[in-house]
Amino acid sequence: MIEIHDLEFRYPVGNFRLEVPALSVETGETVAVVGASGSGKSTLLALIGGIYLPTSGRVRVKDVEVSSLDEKARREFRLHGLGLVFQEFELLEYLDVLDNILLTCRVSDRLRVDADRRRRATELAAEVGLGDKIRRNVVRLSQGERQRVALARGLLLNPPLLLCDEPTGNLDPETTARTLDLLLAQVRERGTTLVVVTHDHDLLPRFDRVLDMKSFQAGERSR
Image 1 (cartoon, rainbow, N blue to C red):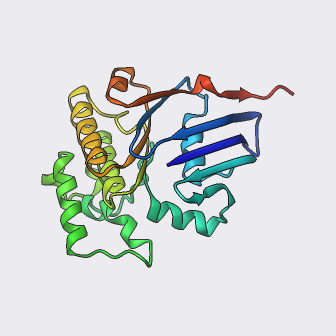
Image 2 (image 1 turned 120 degrees about the vertical axis):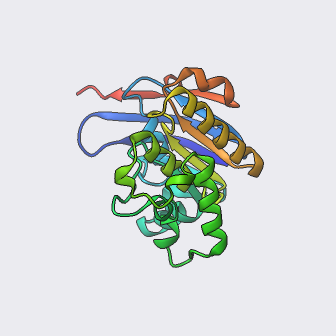
């Protein structure tokens, strides 16, 4: 599902750099990514998702050479080939829970909101514990509730690859367990590949593999 070769990435400003000589993630595999702050965990997800382009090297997802796509093509790739759950949630505050879950369908000419997608969004809202708040504006939700809205949106289109950046970071232990149960059940039922950045080491036994960023070279390049 994911193949990375000879990747190097540097931000335009600052000395941070990430080097990944080789990384492979199999279709249907669930992978937890761990590492110290600043080790490049979120950067790695952004490179896989085509949000960032590598300075050099190749990133391939399924049959798409993501690192060779232009900006428009990468945006289409994210809309139709990925589910993304951002650490900052990326919700629209003037929309309610249901419309935030359906948001991906409203930003692409190739997708539309039909009865089946509304039903799926409603079911996901209930499964993440927000069934009674589906018409509540997201500004009236807690941080943990907003995070669950973002998770439901990531699952809406049954993506072949789901990338999650700290999807349980703002949740209490009970909600964390329930949310991870939902996430793993959804991806395993559909054979979805899952890559999750997490700092919660108690969750690691639930994944097929743990990827420690210490395996790669990351940090500040000396001047």
